[in-house]
Length: 310
Image (cartoon, rainbow, N blue to C red; front, side, top):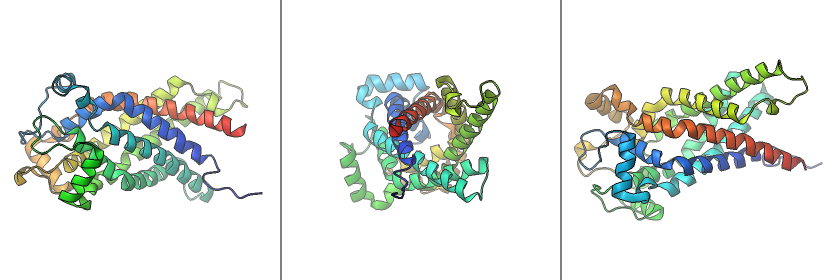
């Protein structure tokens, strides 16, 4: 009998399901992601950054002045990054969870927390260059002081030529802190999911499979609830990461040098609200996005498992 590998076990199905879920999510929510990024980097000091009153005003202004292309700026790296990130995240997460379950050195919520942290760290290291390019493309506006990037390839080439390879890892430190976002989200999701299944077990026959106890509405609610918890806890790190990943301004006084400098300047000039710029667009984007992601993920996973058995 041939020995099994991670890709012959069920983990590969999680990678495929995660990738499909990520692609579906980013396609429907990208305009809000553009708005969120532009709000995050606006600090009131840089005249080359657009100022919007609120999320509807930002969407209307971008659509009027830049067209659909503006609302979908950075879409290609967003699709690439989201698809790769979700695929790798679900794969690394479930692989780690199975490993911890076998070793029995962690139990319950600690397994989910450790698995999510491990997966998030690995994904962050692999995908950071993609998010740098996405952020740069999303921030290209009519007020831009630089020659615009013509696309992903031009952005990669220009960043490497003008700033060196280190620029692709700007924002890595707050990105690694954002590993806590995934850890919080997945821990909340798994624990809430377990509570609902345990509750439903009391209402259905004992032989009923746990996968049949949850509905699409359950997956949507679980996804949104776990995402809200994670956003509120970790959003300031997203703001700092975006500010570090933006294209360096020609005015050295307006640049953010590193994470501690960005945090200091944000607190000094904007106070607490500076760390939560763009959170409305972020919630509008991510709460339904999380619901879509987990609905697609759970249903694609079920389909793949059924197909694999046949």
